[in-house]
Image (cartoon, rainbow over all chains, first blue to last red; front, side, top):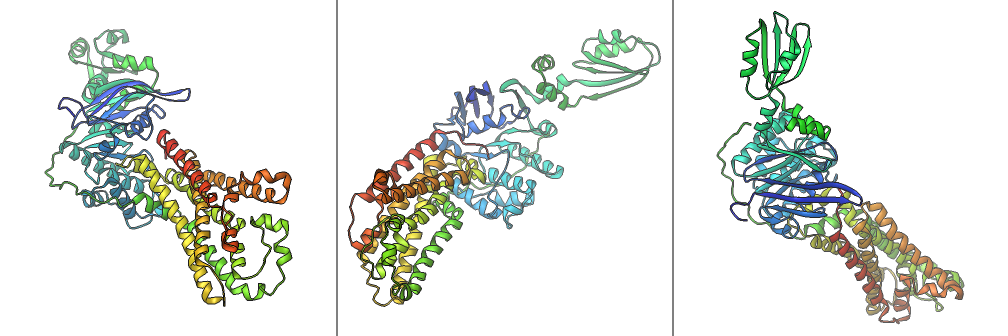
Length: 305
Length: 283
């Protein structure tokens, strides 16, 4: 890999199943040491993209490169350095957790150097047969399998699915530690709060097309602030909608609710002309922005703009 | 976004021997049909030794040499005497080929789909294991199961020699007979690997393989029953595994087992090509 090349490069990637186009020409880059969120509604093409990166399925056209290696041609070399967590962790019921770990570490051809740390951190049950495991317990084994041999790149398909909130927190902290060690993480998720906490950038895919690739901070700025103002005098709603950056104005009794993106200065100056009884401002949840991207393409474009 | 930094001292992972892990896992996954094959192989052989003094006194010649039973057994026995004849009927006739071939069809058909069903295929192929290697190790695991069943049968026959007076077994021909049976199992293994390479459900892949083996048995039986259907004989894999002949009559058309070996090889290689080309399903 050349020093300039990003860790993950996806170029014009298409995948069709017969007449159904699952992924329609997406392109993106993930840099070294980045935690990259890959979001989208069910059936958007997230898992298809991830499985193509691992050569479990083959692209119809386009290229997928990880660590400078072609996902298909150089897969043997690539797989030595990649940790993978599938979306639905299913394991042979008759095997114990320990046997599963032993089997996959043999297939990896490496000692599981992080095993003890992971087992202790996530409180992983390894002695009982898998058939007695809950979804969360299997997910924990899946996390161990992905990280145990200390890979350079982690490809995780909904890593916190099935974990309780406490373990989700532990996992997020662990992910940030791994990032601090220079690991690159590509993860799909439906849990927006997790994405917000750990991801540096996110890509949103919808119906096989890439809707946006943005920094989480930039999205947060776009989401702006939610403001509630209670006036002592009469204010027409049009007066508020004319203020730059103000949108989604709604009224209840003498209070107005609206969103403000960008600087608050024009709003403050406009409000100073009236009697303001109460003013509340808070950051808009990023979840709303993500959900907008999940909706109709026209709406998503509006939000992006 | 919060960031945490933590000083960690993590050693570089040492290399670890892969040690044919997929092959071992294939054998472990096949433990139920494998146990059944071994158990019944040994049981038939030992039961025969126990019953031989009684059934050798019975006048079964006319019954065994009838065209119907000859067709079912896949060999026409006229000279009906001695332990070896019973052994040939009981362990190496077409009927028992159907049983042991069926066991192999079950094991081989399920070898790959099992890994899809239990979710390990995705995880295994995301490791530095080529699909070709995964397939070949699975196939090897199936063949080791076949070898284990055959060796258990031969071992039980050896035990029989202590239980039956004057068993009169010609060991050279017994091994040749066993090789013929193994050739048949090799064919069943290749056929199962072929269906397992593109069918995602283990029961479906095993069922279809077993169905084809059963159809072959039907061809062999019908072909032996009537001249009108004689052409069916050569379309049946059982025709090329006349295991009674070498054991009882000490004769074998040398190229017959090779037909099975080559057919098994062709099926197995076709399965390998398909497995390498296809998109693997989600778990």
